[in-house]
Length: 179
Image: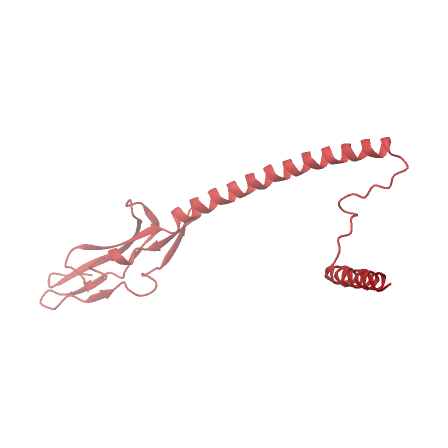
């Protein structure tokens, strides 16, 4: 502690958002004393535990504003004074978070609307199918789930059979014309 030939100083690190509101508990560096005729001891708040990159405060993530770092991160104690080192933080991805929430809401609403349209169309189709089944009880009706679409091999087979048919027709016409 200071005596008549000694002086002391204190340093506190504060963590603030860009509006000046505290977002983390202040950290005090050890109080130091030195002889009046000596140079004041130095301090360094650019290291752990004083320098913090990100702070989670009330469910929001803040990141240190590296463009606005305080000028007294590394300095000397001041005789008889409390030196404040003020780290300022900005809310991380505030705009992106709001934009993402809006996109998710819009996507969810679009999905609900599409689902409702599909359900309505399906209900109409089922009612129509039931009506057709009632009117044509002896007819086989395939739903869109039961229909079989041709695959690539079936398309090739149909093309081959078409060429065979054309060849046979041509051959038959040639034979008929020779008679």
